[in-house]
Image 1 (cartoon, one colour):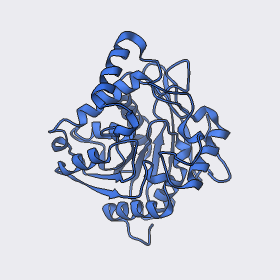
Image 2 (cartoon, rainbow, N blue to C red):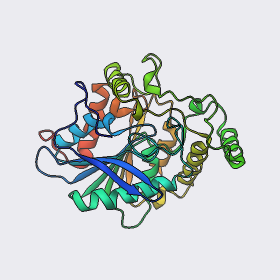
Image 3 (cartoon, rainbow, N blue to C red):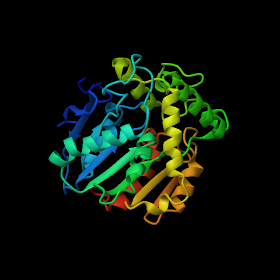
Image 4 (cartoon, rainbow, N blue to C red):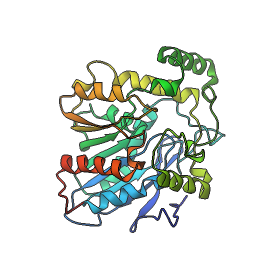
Amino acid sequence: MELVALAKNPVPSGATAGYFDCPGGIKLRYARWDASRGPQRGTVCLFQGRGEYIEKYFEVVADLRRRGFGVATMDWRGQGGSTRLLSNPKKGHVRSFTEFDQDLTHFMKTVVLPECPQPYVAMAHSMGGNILLRHATVPNSWFSRMVLSAPMIALDASKVGAPHSLARTYAEIVAGLGLGSMYVHKGTGEPLEVGPFEGNPLTSDRERYQRNRMVLEAAPGLGLGSPTVAWLRAAYRSMARLRSPDYPLRVEVPLLLFAAGADCIVSTQAIEEFALRLKVGTHVLIPQAQHEILQETDEIRQRFWAAFDAYMGVGTTAA
């Protein structure tokens, strides 16, 4: 699948896009860009959340390139333009987050290391933040820093609709019975972004919400519905790993974590608690932001980029 361009969401110029292979016949879609303005600052490796796709981040790609960064990004397995894992392509499915670990490794070795200038900075959202935190304790990381937007360290209780202990037990039992490919309770094949703007849990910015909706209307194959029970089990197992009391102490890559004060997808409290235990990291709370900080209003995005620029040493003239 080629990158999808719309009048209100054009493909940033100079894109190189294609597919790379992972074991098991998995093909992952990627795209990369050189910086559009000097001085050259290296490459931001951009990792999306569950159900997202490269096109949703064109605006972010342009923001980064203006700051002197090249950008490399991909669609995780099971979403966007990458190989779907079930016969029903609308189900958000994975057996274990170790599969996403494989995606990360092959992306770096196949796309980034051969083609993209160092240093490498990871920028990730939500589920992508969970996957990158799994890597943050690995010695000799590829990344000099990580910037994580609303990382999925724990789900918000209102999103789950049941006590976490009950929801995790449900996922373990149902998936253990071989029914992991079922949707979670009340799950559907409809992406969140095709619903009405009013009351959506993602962003308070109507224009960006409608822009993303138009992308999915133009290319329905990019969309993803609710997760499966197997995905939920895998997510709970991965979150439990991150919530081990000593895990933040073992993080070796400097982190900048962003928490959204109005988030009802992931737990803002869990992000703040994790950040306070870090030896090499800090966090920023943006009180008015909903879950998708980088899809939010100009005012909220400006707060994100101001903190990013200060953290990365990007002068205001470069931004």
